[in-house]
Image (tube, rainbow, N blue to C red; front, side, top):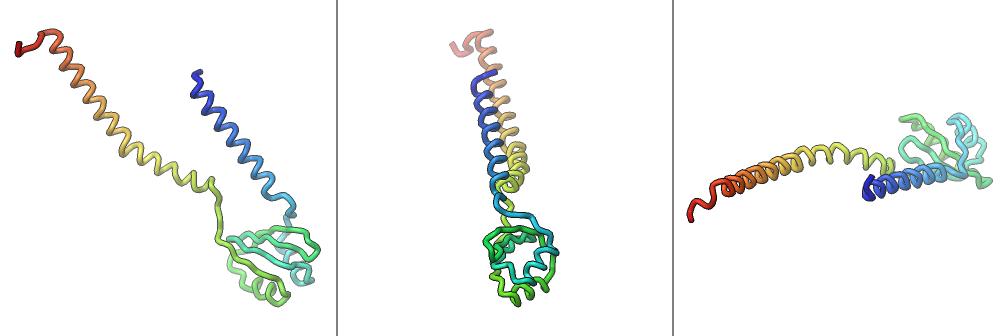
Amino acid sequence: MSSAVKSVIFFVAGASCAALLWGSLAGRGQSEVSFAQFMTDVERGSVREVSVEGNQVRGLHRDGSRFRTAMPANYPAMMKRLRDNGVSITFREANFGSWVWLIQLIPLAFVATVTYAIPAAFVAGLVFLVTSAVSRQRSCFGELNR
């Protein structure tokens, strides 16, 4: 196996390990709670602040512990309960991470390959065949204009 292939395999393996490590450490310190438990905590007044990102809710209890839960779609009563119980609410744009962005590039790369690389290789092959045929013809019959 060539050193270039070994380098690519090593790079991909290293990047995969780094992504797995990041994913396992990203959610550290947060406990997963059910939505019912979350709403009970809100009613008791033990929730200080929440951040809503898509349907994910991440928050902070008044004792400093962090939590996360998923909320149902289109649940306006939750916002009223949060406001009524003095919970600070922050909304964030849904972030799907770089993996989704990379996955979306795969069809683009395929289209670019089909659109540009294959025709370019075809034209280069034709040019090579024509030039090699002309050079063979000259070598067999000599120069015609001499």
